Image 1: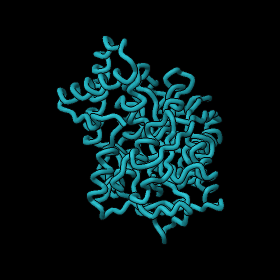
Image 2: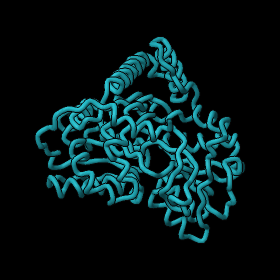
Image 3: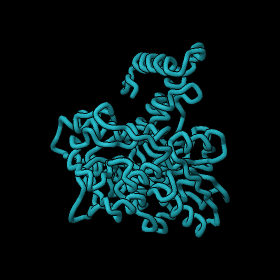
Length: 384
């Protein structure tokens, strides 16, 4: 059974509970999201409009050019929620930029995610003549400063083609939007995105043209290399996107939920419950308002994935009949993992005097040792 089939089938294993009384989200909220024009930003705007119509609640969307910029306002209580990408998982694990002294593993919790008909993929300029991932060798590849999600995802697709960052020309950009502007302007040959991201339309309409190279599902060796870098991906055939993608011409590639709407574990359970219930109840109002928004459908919510759900979400899911004993166990295990990671970070207090690079290496060792001692897989033991 495919991952998507399993997600849809999960609805039949849920525990049905009585419907709850009407509740309203906060009158004003601030959410962070990817840059203006990104599919994630557009989806949050659509949800905000639905909340405005249904509850007279205002969602102010703060665009962030990288993962740090998106999560920092939530950590500082200037925003309550973030519509992140897989950077939410990296934040939980305390890897890449989140392994720095002033960050460390974050206790983020999922509210909802969108599992739409898109793929996460490398968008390439057609004039760069990149037909497969192996063709990326020697090409100019976008690296977004402070965006471990984007950069590790790119590394995963390079790995599928048997390549690393050492095999390509790394071109640095300040943000996601800037990387795609660079693609349009001829400064780079490829950048990572969702196939439904709005910024890809500019490349598609430009003289360079665009193409999404496939990630062949039959290439088991390639997938083994990809999943070693990015274990959260699964094979997917996208039927929505630019570059000629459609139901009759799907893109054979990889996917994971995006955006991943998260808050910290300290967010009030009643507030999170009200927001999630609102997203469930107003789904019909926003599902067609932005590409990918239909992926927030309740039955598409992954109950067995890599970031735990918030207690408020669990309450809303139970009331909607979308929860199970297996989901609860998985959630409890992930929360335990967060506890182990937090305790490992506390052990690093004596290492604060180390230089940044030495500190990251020391944290890598402490993190791996702590997780293994708890019977958990560290997954990553290297730094890009």
